[in-house]
Image 1: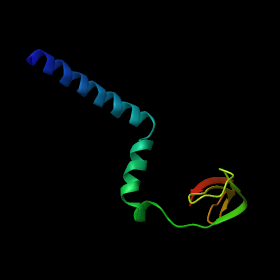
Image 2: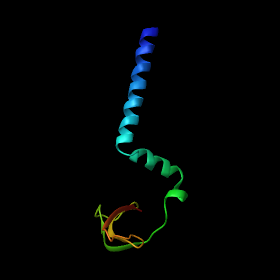
Image 3: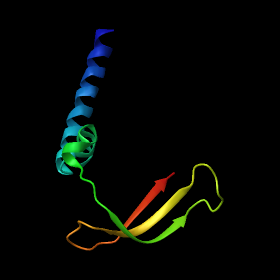
Image 4: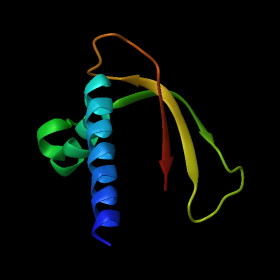
Amino acid sequence: MSKTKNILSWIIVLFGIIGIIREYSYNFSRTKVLYSSFYPDKYFEKDGLIYKDQVRLDGTPSQNDIYYFHGILKKMVEKQQLWAIIIQ
């Protein structure tokens, strides 16, 4: 029984080390998103969307409509196009 626990604990440690190495190679992108979602006031700022067009994705009117917006953010330095999906 103790040999099985020992093997399982080493497998868990190995997965942990692999996870840390993987996050380090991708500059902790998933961890940053998780951390910033806990503190949105510190890491996110409000901005306005100058939208060019708006399309309803599901096509039929219902209580929960899904819209697809296409436009540019007001504060964005490089004017890149942005797509957003809003569920109302």
